[in-house]
Image (cartoon, rainbow, N blue to C red; front, side, top):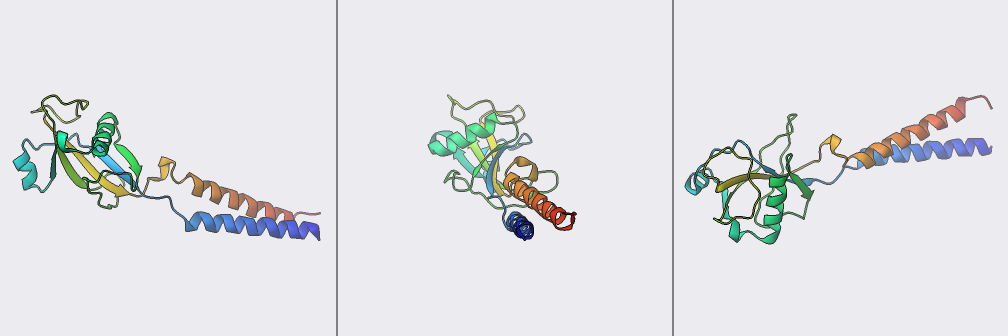
Length: 170
């Protein structure tokens, strides 16, 4: 009788873990990505495309820190929702299979004595840096889905163990 209760307990725990993994998702993240294909050469041209234009000295400390982190990162910089800069817009976009999606483009005009690291844009004036901001669901390989995958794997393991205990000879 104890063996049957242990089997039922394993099965119930397995089902709960599988349901928990399917019923939850990781929180979205904010992406700050500098654009190596930037081809706008003036503030007027950027405004014509409806890009937000900010002068470096007018950015908040948080916006400067995010922008610096994006410039220093090869793959863009991500942060939790709510940790973005108040100046930047973060439209929610679905990212395609190539990992890219449209977002809000920001143009930062560097001051003459800028302390920002070099931008990865092609050579030009060097005063205009572009960054795309957006909100997205983290990609599967990012590690944000790890709790769900562990819960699913643990639940399936418990269900298989319960099935084995139920049908294995005593």
